[in-house]
Image (cartoon, rainbow, N blue to C red; front, side, top):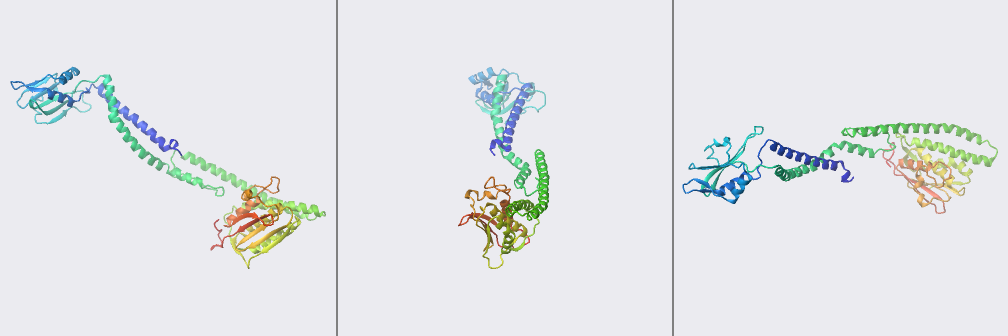
Length: 461
């Protein structure tokens, strides 16, 4: 996901913008409050006033303190009509200028031993003037100067001062808060979304064969809980629909077996041999389709026990059961057993018998009605079913195992046989492949793994 679409980065951007706006509003409100209260905001700081006065102090011939007329002092007096200050030394000489607030006229020599101080009032007190006191070395010796702020601020100057304040105080504050937000927000989002991340991870593991799975709601944020609940409700409905579908297919397959068996028995009594053979083959395909539907349901049963079985015995049984059908369809049938004695594997006998039967019936259907259908038992633990038909194109060697896939659109069957074969083989931990026979035709090979140490459990595919 790009950063622009990330919840984390959206929060970071919006929080930083909100913090910048709030900080600017706070500083502007503070400046407005001071302006409304009539507090004089100095364009020239008290330190600047003190420095100008210090440079102007001199001694008169009689020892008194005087002020020399300097350009800086003239400018200070012109810009600040409310300017006031007092100067005195240890010998008791005093000099004052401007209207000294009465709060400070009574101080006298009380602050003579103070190097410097700022005099003011508590927030919330009635508006009163502030002052700065500082003892300084001057041309007239050591004196103590007390002064108030410089010139008062006009509306335009207040705006300029506000922008300066925002630049000096606001910008560093915004940068600091942005850094804190950049660090803290991903941590908070990651912690808050941990439950949703778990739900997403569980959702990726949901499979059609694992019904009853629900997304966890523990630790899911309240804002995302309705979405998780809605997904769980949808999964419940899908499970119910899937269960109804499976019950229907299972019941339909069972119901089909009886009329198919009756039809097969009646066809055997037909006098026309050619017609009887054709109809018997059609009925066999219909019976095979019903069995495939049952196989699909059996594969979804998770409690089928595996047991040791002999591949050679399995091949002999299937060859014997299907020989009449193979011969009636115009083929020869052959069993090649290259095993030296029993060849045991762990498996479900009924399922493997159906898989081998499906491969033989697939050979009957696609073997071009000629040649021999061969069952082979090879070491180690391998079964093969080969025909002498047209074979399978290389580009279809994997697709033929997909459900409902047919090599030819008008071919008989539902396209389930080879898919069920692969499902059965994979459940046994085996592998099925298809290749061309040396003399033409297709050869399906099933290679089984070694026997499990726990034969009652299905081996892992």
